[in-house]
Image 1 (cartoon, one colour):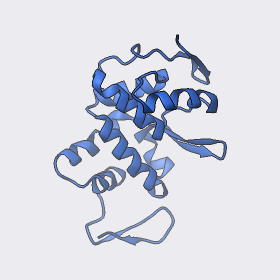
Image 2 (cartoon, rainbow, N blue to C red):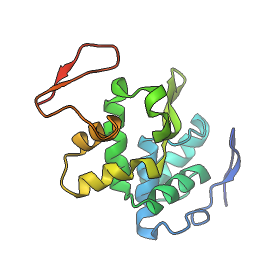
Image 3 (tube, helix red, strand yellow):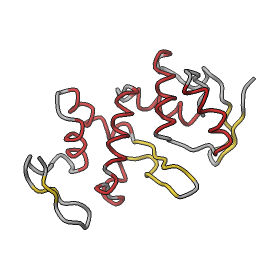
Length: 171
């Protein structure tokens, strides 16, 4: 049995294997699980009540847009762990992310309201420099600052200006 989800992006059959493309079978449960925490699309409360418990137990019946997101990130070189770490860093840095300046980094800008959780989709190719710097030994947070500063982050121990707020000291 398959569940059909209907949302703004159209009908979506929650088939466990269709739509994953080249994403390794072993990674599919991780992509799905991590996307429950960092949603690239919110299918609604009812569907999430159906999808989330299965996904958390290793099922790969994820909405198609989640699979497409995983395919794009995987094709750019991301692992599920890279996605999760970067998403966590983005969520903790939202006050420094400027919609006008950083819009190209996202396919869907981080949005939220009281009735829905925060959702966003990364533009995979725009984040390749982040994971390249991390794999080269850079701190993940420092690599994020580098991407957000267009490759010109404040020096360590220097002042890092925030959007409209006072500068903070980087240690």
